[in-house]
Image 1 (cartoon, helix red, strand yellow):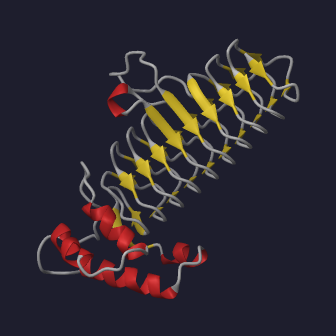
Image 2 (cartoon, helix red, strand yellow; image 1 turned 90 degrees about the vertical axis):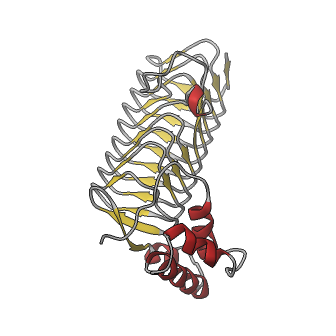
Length: 268
C-alpha cells in the first residue's frame, strides 16, 4: 500500500492494503477504497464513497457521497475477469453516481475523460468510452459499450442504448430514449429519439468560426434533407468535396465510420 504522507484519511474510512493514495488526497468518513484502486493527487472523496475494482481516479477529481465507483459490471456474461475503470482529471462525480469497469467482450476497460460533470444518479455502464468535458444531467444513463464524444450533454432522465455512439458537441434532450447513433453537434429528443437539428448554440459558445458553422449547416442539409440516394450515399458524395477539418468533416467521418447502430434522423 502506498499512501502519501499528506493524505487526509478519516478515522472511520477503510483503505485496503495495496491501494495507492496520492498527495493531498482527502478521504471522508465511512468511505471504502479497494486494494487495486489508485487515487491521483488532490482527489477528494466525501463521506460514504465506495471505490473498488481496478480503478484509477485522476488528479483533482471530486466524488460525492454514496457514489459507487468500480464495482462489478451489470452484465450476466461477466465472469469475474480482471477489467478496469479509468477516470481522468478534474471530474465532478455527484451523489449516487455509478460507474462500472469493462468486460472481456468489450475490451476490458471503461474510460472517462477529463473535466466531466456527472450529476446525481447518473450511470456509466461497462465498456463505455467517454470523452472530455461531457455533462450527464441527473439520472441519465448509458448502456454498455456506449461512446460519448467531447462536450456532449445528456439531459436529465435520458437513456442511451448499448453500443450507441454520441458524437462530440451533441445535445441529448431530457427524458429521451436514444437507440441510434447521434451525429456530432446533433440535437435529439423524444422516445425514441429523433434528430431535431444542430447544436448551433453550443458550437457558438465554444468559439467555432462562422464559416465552419455555415459549412456544417450546409452539409447537414445535403445529408439529412437530400432526396437522392440513401443517407450514407449522400455522405459519401459529400466526402469527396469537404475540407480536411472542421465540424462538417467530423460529421461526415462519423457517419462513414463503422457502427452496429443506425442513425437518429429527423422525424418524418
